[in-house]
Length: 272
Image (cartoon, rainbow, N blue to C red; front, side, top):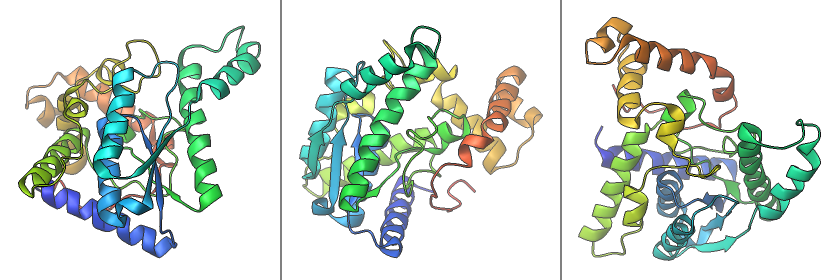
């Protein structure tokens, strides 16, 4: 499928799901990253800018440029955006959990607590105003368990849940290009498209470093096996080491329990 087809399929699915569930408005966490940017644009195209509510949720490791990118996106889309800092709730959790966690809340526990703080804020807004929380995850990260249970796995619907990370970039660039061709404001800031993806949950954290593999390689392996049914030997013949392929597949198996709690997403055969 071409980027336009993927994008339009996701938008149509989001619009239909919201209508069927009785939601008129959506709320989305805006991180300044590519995933939340593309989903926010999809939501505007599906529901209209006046019905999309963006929330910036800066934490202890949020970079200034990411906050700026998130606000620029909201301004470009003409959506309402507010900022809710998670610093105070996270610091409260640090104090409360330090002793039970061995003297300090650190490492993965601290990173995931930040993600859960953000989702508590978003779900509070969802409940207060009847807005549908739209999930911003993608298929690459869901397959690898690169998400936080009860954190960024939350949401009523994940329009990009069936889209691999490299295609998130493709459709984001396509949508920007469409806006430029139509003489409209280009929605996604260029810096969002070119900076290394990061959850910004720890100092100098980068997603590909945390995953241990580049998204381009990861997606090629995942698509070959999951979408085309190729064997390990066939994927190795594409130029990957057997260890790399087996490590990816073992990770996919290991995190099936997380995917069971992911929200629904469009079941469209994008890659066949």
